[in-house]
Image 1 (cartoon, rainbow, N blue to C red):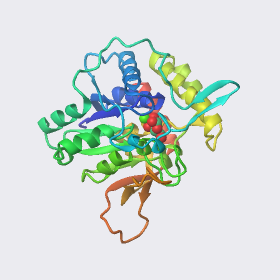
Image 2 (tube, protein in one colour; image 1 turned 180 degrees about the horizontal axis):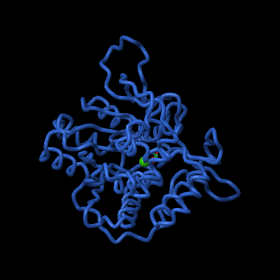
Image 3 (cartoon, helix red, strand yellow; image 1 turned 60 degrees about the vertical axis):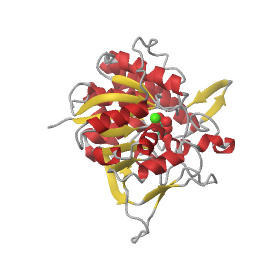
Length: 331
Ligand code: RIB
Ligand code: CA
């Protein structure tokens, strides 16, 4: 079977870190390169965190890291639209800040691999335009700024790529605001540009990721596996479970979604996603209460043609066993 050749786009981040690991270790994926983007944290931090994970995997010589955009295309021009990195998912518990996001991934040493001088937007354009038709799958799991910028500069890349599989959005689940999920809310204009670019797109939203939570028993099993990588994944998910239990409890209290890893895993095993429907989906860019909302048209006769495959559900057990298989080198 031919491996899926992907360019990952990350704002690392604990779940981005697990996504990088899944992409790097799975025999079904060829991780071509990684682009970083602002999002969970400022760009210099998401890039530094990404390089730490690349070093953990020993990939510094083979998988190059391209720093991307430092802020949204336009949304940050209006202060009221953006409350800061990582949305509003921060609080104080007993005098200690609880956050969904890691500032620096200090479980890992400072990186020795350096980022590329070339910026992500140029990397996308050169790599895709010089590649074969259908050679690359793009997997963005942060704000969509880099890819939208690349599409604006060189729209022909939309017709050259195989597909885009992205983590973002939500229909019945949101996190940054009552209407919007973080990756889309952070740069709604970029998301709308990507959603309407004409490429094949699969959206892995919160509706799917919240139904595929990893629990604390599984974290213990990861520690028992005992490799440096499985220990690190266990650390990341343990941190997420602590934060989610306090800030945004899931149905099962001691569990948390690992959003970005699910987007990578559906390339390895498509049936981790369930109820995937081809729908019309647009992003609210009005700057109002629904700013960044992913609006799925439920009508049978939509005004505009369907544009994305939207996953309304996911299979938790399949995702969990796939994660373990990847870490054991079995998938
Ligand atoms: O809303 C979930 C997304 O926000 C994930 O990509 C996570 O990494 C955070 O950026
Ligand atoms: Ca992310």
